[in-house]
Length: 141
Image 1 (cartoon, rainbow, N blue to C red):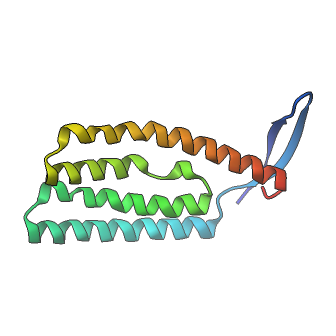
Image 2: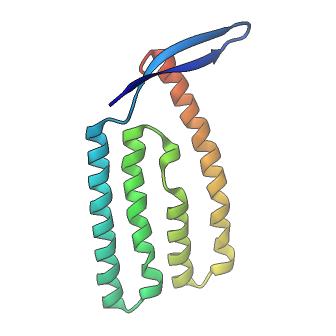
Image 3: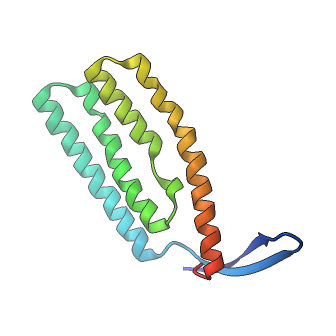
């Protein structure tokens, strides 16, 4: 594990202040935990896909169960890395779109769900920036 110095610029009204903070790479323990979660979720979602599809005979819409495994894994990644932007929102939207549209037949009006993707990431980036700024001010970084 290496520790590198990152130059963070905090701009105030009249002058610029330069803050140097230590940025450690993602901890090995967290990385191992995340890889374990990813492996388990892949196994669980593939098993759920095969079992549910075999029982119901609906192979086409059930492949979206695999996408929900990535969504659960990305929730853990958001928590560990403390960044909302890491959430796999497109996977969630694709899964919801295919599942709901297949069972309700409302393919046309539900495409509007895809318009929420840029809204989510625009909002998430701003929230992450505010959290990062607060962490710098508190010296928590």
